[in-house]
Amino acid sequence: MKLEKYQIEEHNHAHRSTHQQRIDYVRSWVSNSDHIIEKLIEFQIAIPSWALGTGGTRFGRFAGAGEPRSLEEKIEDIGLLHSLNKSSGAVSLHIPWDIPKNPKAIKALAAQLDIKFDAVNSNTFQDQKGQQHSYKFGSLQHVDKTTRDQAIEHNLEVIHYGKELGSSSITVWLSDGSSFPGQLNFRKAFENTLDGLQKIYGALPDDWKMFVEYKAFEPNFYSMTVGDWGQSLLYASKLGPKAYTLVDLGHHLPNANIEQIVSLLLMEGKLGGFHFNDSKYGDDDLTVGSINPYQLFLIFNELVEGMDARHMNHATGLGWMIDASHNVKDPLEDLLQSVEAIMIAYAQALLIDQKALEYARQKNDVALAQEILQVAYRTDVRPLVAEARLRSGAALQPLELFRTLKVREHLIKERGTQTVATGL
Ligand code: LRH
Ligand code: MN
Image (tube, rainbow, N blue to C red; front, side, top):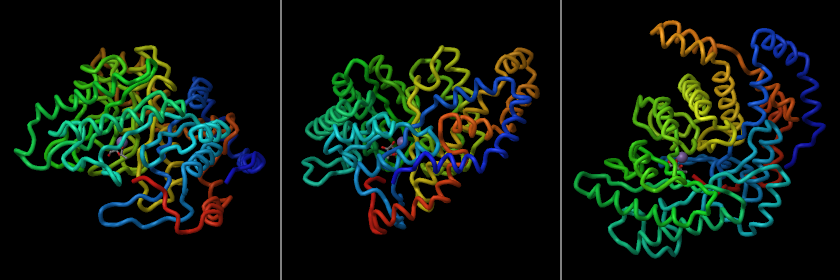
């Protein structure tokens, strides 16, 4: 389904006067409004190809309807999201869930919809039909060299697909680890994994990056071989300048200070990117900003301060990707809400008076430092985010227009109710 320009213009026309009042008010007291709006327009978030259908848990999956049946339809759905908010201009593919059968055609379709290819993801956490060696006891860490070589080969294949599509990074998340004390020699598991990552690293084109994604637990519940930011940083530092860590917000132990982790990884020049989502307990993969929006704001505060300290371009300096699973919401509505939450957190962080904050810190004026942060957090920046959409030719209220145009109903008419998208 493709949205027509007039449909967005009609929607914006109907919302114009309310929006104008709101944006005029914000601009009346937010001095750097235009700077923030320009930054928001540039900022693009990659949509995960594995989250365009309904997700589930081991206790069940309640199928949605009108789900994409192919990679082409997934790219079309991302094109639809992008036409609604002009902030979803990239896709992150997962192999083999989304092998491009005709890379040229897929590339052309994506270009037509102004969709770029962000990181490609390998998958050595599931056994594929006809696979020779099982990953039950791990992949790159495995005690058996033939299993390790099979996993390395798969990652080289993923790089090959990425090159054909114009991607320039690979995300390696390993479910490797152990579920019982005694099961694993941690040192040998690390050394095997490093050796495997080095062989994958060696196959990277010059301009590529490798993101090493860490996770505290699940599917292993005693140890994970890339279990936290320290371990990921150790791998990335030993691998070389093209290797970075990837921060999935749901991959931390309870109450971890993720904003401090982000600050230090940026300081080391080893922060590669994000998998944005939210969680209350484990790797819940919930809508971004739905549980702990203040934490997301604090993370963006460290990102803005840290990236400016390194003169990094906010839009292109890191990999901005969503990684969520939709068990009870419409996947497209959930993704629209996640993108909105990220844009709001980024806009609030751009509002922070970093000079005044540093001054308060030099004075150890803790209360003032909190006031400076919370003035920004308590500012309703939604008119700025909407204005950025308006100037980009997108919808002032994407979710409302998605519903007004009965997009899901159209997709069901087109695809039926029984279609199941590949992915989580
Ligand atoms: C692991 C993870 C990883 C993906 C998978 C779909 O929990 O976050 O990024 O490969 O989800
Ligand atoms: Mn992830």
